[in-house]
Length: 61
Figure 1 (cartoon, rainbow, N blue to C red):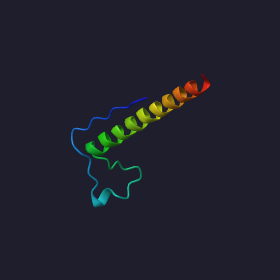
Figure 2 (cartoon, rainbow, N blue to C red):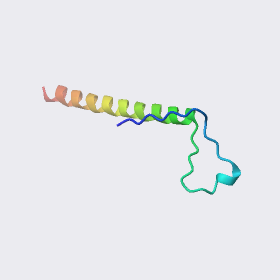
Figure 3 (cartoon, rainbow, N blue to C red):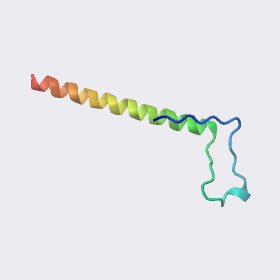
């Protein structure tokens, strides 16, 4: 599942808001990089899984 979050401006935390529980501190770039990181992790996870299956099939023959 992929959730897209679109922000018109980066979110900033001022000193008065730092103590608020659950405060969002991500900027758009942070969200993009985290999303990219998760997609790359998923891609390489699937790739390594497929390579392991291929290796097992080759060894079985």
